[in-house]
Amino acid sequence: QVQLVESGGGSVQAGGSLRLSCAASGLTATMGWFRQAPGKGREALASRRVNGVTYYTDSVKDRFAISKDNTKNILYLQMDILKPEDTAMYYCAASTYNCVSRSYTLSEGCYHYWGQGTQVTVSS
Image (cartoon, rainbow, N blue to C red; front, side, top):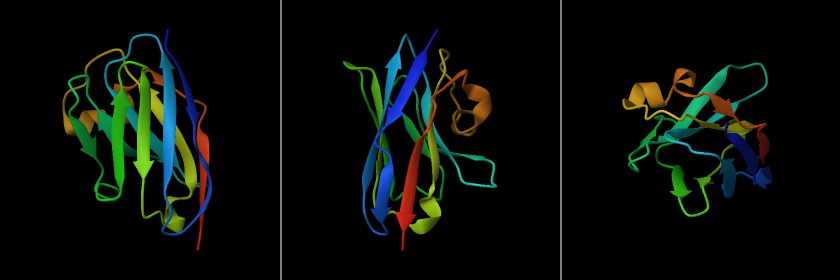
């Protein structure tokens, strides 16, 4: 069983930065970040395979960076140049399997465990 706890969300002005953290308990392989804005579906943002390879969705690839501290088992999402349209609930996700392809790691189907979410609000 894997438990995920996100933190680091908050309110920021456009152009600002935030770093989200996801503390994982238990063994994880592929991990990812998703978000869901009010009235919209869940959107994949970034993923990290167990070998360190990372993937990004096009809308955030030049502004967001996913990383992991393996010693602490914490996944991060550094978010820069934030825009009002980045306002959403952000979720960490984990799989105990090593999802391989970019498309699969950026889909909900790869993941079995989800955190409770952390809210990010970007004001103009």
